[in-house]
Amino acid sequence: MSETDPALMSAETLLGLYARRALSPVEALKAVMERVARYNPWVNAFAAMNPHALRAAGESEARWAAGRPIGPLDGVPATVKDLLNLAGFPTRRGSRTTDTTVATEDAPAVMGLKEAGAVILGKTTTTEFGWKSPGDCPLHGITRNPWNPQRTPGGSSSGAGAAGAACFGPLHIGTDAGGSIRIPAAYCGLVGVKPTFGRIPQWPLGAFGHVAAAGPMTRTVRDAALMFSAMARFDLRDPYCLPDEPRDWRHGIEDGVAGLRVAVVRRMGFEPPLDADGDAVLTGAAQMLAEQGALVEEADPGLPDTRAIFGRVWGVALSRVLATIPLEKHELLDAGILEVARKNGEMSAVDYLAAEAMRLEAAHAMARFHQRYDLVLTACTPTAAFAADQPTLKPAEALWRDWAPWTFAFNLTRQPAISVPVALDGEGMPRAVQVVAALYRDDLAFRGARALEMAATLPLANPAETGRLAKGG
Image 1: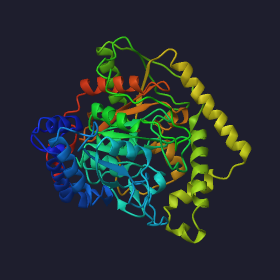
Image 2: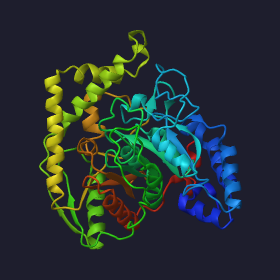
Image 3: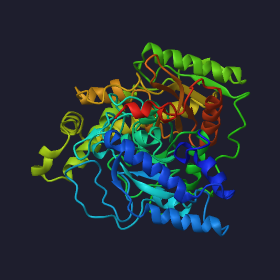
């Protein structure tokens, strides 16, 4: 990261400079805001900006000057995906069907960042109700990838991915019900963490609440672990929340992978598509871990065909969304929502319970698999980021074929999974792999991700450091 421009610095670097009085939170925020003013008109990462951010940065500056920071993120700029409540702002969910009533309390993950002292820069764009991977929505239009404005940043955490790559602050909250953190992180060259289900509390629970998780999107693995530490705090509002004691998830992150057993997995109960560049990146990542002493081999966990489960879960969830929206407003929705709900949403209670039984079968298969392997390494996306303006064809099939074939299984099994950028393809776009650990072993996932990050040949963390970002406008 740059030693001169605060906007390009990691959260850990900013905090070190604050502690030495070599930089102030106000200076850092102003540097980030200058970038937002310059590049966001075409990146389109924000659903709303926080008019009180500068005041919050000033309060943080005063605390640092007095030697009394309130938490481990004091003064670090952060953003919130517009599927989560941020007090004083409406939660529009990328939809023209939602109202402008402001939230009266923060979502748990947002509360965790605020209590740690983070300065909330604004709310980032999302695909409508978080339903798809292309980074557009009816309310805010198309969000573009800072690596190449003709490409999508992915979704549904589209604005968080774009903001991270454009250096609009180092910390970004995304949500992930089928890959919505990991896919945009992969497309944008970020680290994206889907935690163990329940590790980071959520409220209110959305339509995908029984498989979704909130998590960090950052430019480094250590920043992700630092942010994770602030977010992973018990909150009684979430009935699924794990009663964890607070901890610093950076502890042990540098322990490496020597002696760990790693399975390279290429089947998810079916054969997910993967292009030649993605296959080469996966093979290269496996070699990186082996060179650090991991015991790496290809293996098949014997999962059921998870496509059938995922399609049913998605269809029922979107049908539930439609049921809350007056019929006269359906014409305002993304057409793909209507199609997926119509195709996969009509099922009996028996069919739904059968899908849940298949989900538990998948979770059991992975639990057994992790008796032999500490970590699983897979591809993260079938291709690099595709065209931002590409029309969505056959959305029910695109969910498991084009967007999330490598990611959704781990929402069903509720395991921790981290997207890690490891290379650039021939067109200069980021490519990533996915590090997965057993349920509740988020610590091992962080260790594996950090080992890959240290060994990866990705020459630059983001396009901001090359001047490529300036070419997008």
